[in-house]
Length: 207
Ligand SMILES: C[S@@+](CC[C@H](N)C(=O)[O-])C[C@H]1O[C@@H](n2cnc3c(N)ncnc32)[C@H](O)[C@@H]1O
Image 1 (cartoon, rainbow, N blue to C red):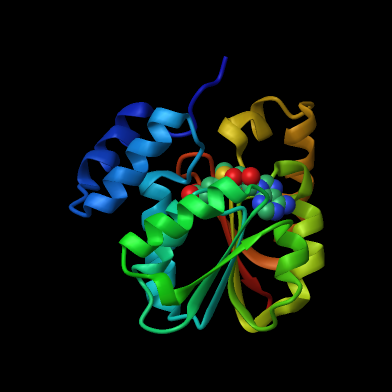
Image 2 (spheres, rainbow, N blue to C red; image 1 turned 45 degrees about the vertical axis):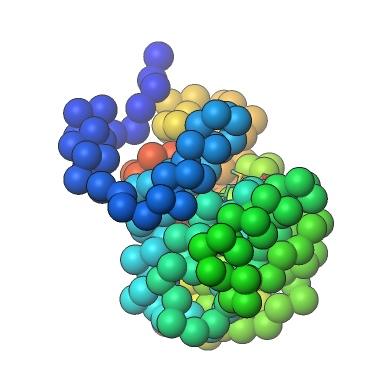
């Protein structure tokens, strides 16, 4: 039975270094914990934040925003520009609005209820496309939205190692879908996978 990607001691060492002072981050993590809501987590959030800092994007589109935790990490890094949040569930988007209002980002975020793939198609020149939707639709999402990326746009996708099942349970239905997605991303884009938590893929267009 395989239940971790990184040796837990290594993961715990890194986690302990990631001390967080922001009370809103802690409040959102507490909400996720109490409600068993899957979020990218602190180490993943720090990856999003760092990429946004380096990239200085005008437009970030999230497909699968939940209650706004990942968006908050992005927003905290932005000097300009906005984040478009999408989620199927109105309840999640409502909560995201409350959290991001509290964080002072009312004017920097757009809140959309519905299918993030369809909504994403309304936006051109996406600088960062963040995929965190149902695994079965990852490949569809990138195929539908890749032409909406800016020339030097970046794709970030969470959960691409699916708790290691992608490697250790390759016949699992979701593993197969993710393997197909990962292969596509490495063929079509210049990609890396960070074995952070559930696996985070980061990609740009091939030059
Ligand atoms: C893993 S959670 C998102 C967590 C969030 N990105 C974070 O790290 O804080 C996935 C969310 O995506 C939403 N979702 C799944 N498929 C979607 C789609 N096609 N369009 C919009 N939202 C979707 C679900 O309702 C769920 O709230």
